[in-house]
Image (cartoon, rainbow, N blue to C red; front, side):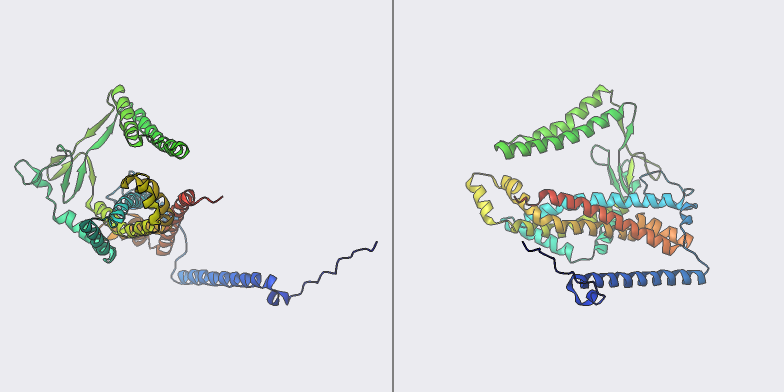
Length: 404
C-alpha cells in the first residue's frame, strides 16, 4: 500500500502582504490604523505644546472648585457654594429631563399625525400635511423662540391674578399660567407615603405583565381580554386603597399669590416649557413622516384581509398594521430620538440651564478650561447617544420578523 505524503507547505514571504489576497486586506487595515494613531498623537502633542506656550496644562481639578453661580432649574439641591462638578450634574439631569419628556411627547404627536395624514377625511389629512411641512421646513431655533415668546408675552402677569384682576387660575384654582412660568401643586409626603408609592409602582408592573399575558393568550387562543379597563383599574384602585388605608399620607401644596409672585407649589419655568414643546412639535413632524412611510410599507392586502374577517379599522391598525410597520419605523425613529437629545443644546437660547449652559458655558467662562469642558460635554452626548441607540436597538430586535 503506497504512502500518501502531503505536499510541502509554501513558506511565508513578505511580498505576500501586498500580492496575496489572503493578507492584503489585513495589511491595508494595519497601515491605516497606524496612520490614524500617528495623526492622533500629532494632534495631541501639538495641543499640549500650544497650551504650554500659553501657560496652560490639561487637568480636571477645576471640577472640584466652587462654582459661584446659581441654576434656576434644579432636580437636585444646588447652591452657588457647590462645585462645578455638581453644577455639571444638575445640567446633565436637566438635559435628560427635557430629552426624555420630549421623546415621549414627540412620539405620541408623531404617531397621531402620521396616522391622520392617511385619513380618508380630506380636511384632516390636509391639516396634518400643513402641520408636518410647516414644522419640518422651519429651523428649530425659530420654533423655540416662538413658543417662548408666546409663553412670556401672551400670558398674564402674576399681579393680574389678584381679586378683581383679569386672570384666574384653572383646574379648581390649582394651576396658574403666567409670564413667569406655570405653577402647579406640590406633593407633600408624610409618613406612610412610601408604601403608597410602592403600591403604585407595583401596579405599573402589573399592567405590563397583564398586557404581556393578554398578548400571549391572544396569540395562542385568539381570545381577547379587556386590557384597557383592567389596566385602568390597576392604575387607580390599588394606589387609592393604599392611600386611604394609610390615612391619606400624601397631600398637595397649592400655589398662592403672595406679594408680586406666587408662593408654594412647583414652578415650571417658561424656558423649560418652550424648549420641551418646540423640540416635541418639531421632532414629531419627522416622526409623522416615518410612521406614514411605515404604514404605507404594509401591503394593502393585509388591511383588506382584516376587514374581510370583520375587524374594525381601529383594531386593524392596532393589531395588524402597526406591528408590521414597526419594523420599518424603529430604525429611523432612533435617529430622531438622538437628534432631539442633541438639539436640546439649543436651550441656551431661552435661558434653560442644561449641561450646555452649565458645564459647556458658565463653567468654561469662569475657569478658562474650554478644552476640558468641551471634551467632557462631547463625552456626555456620546455616551447618552450610545445608550439611547442600544436600548432602541434592543427593542428593534424584539419586534423584527422572526424567521425559522
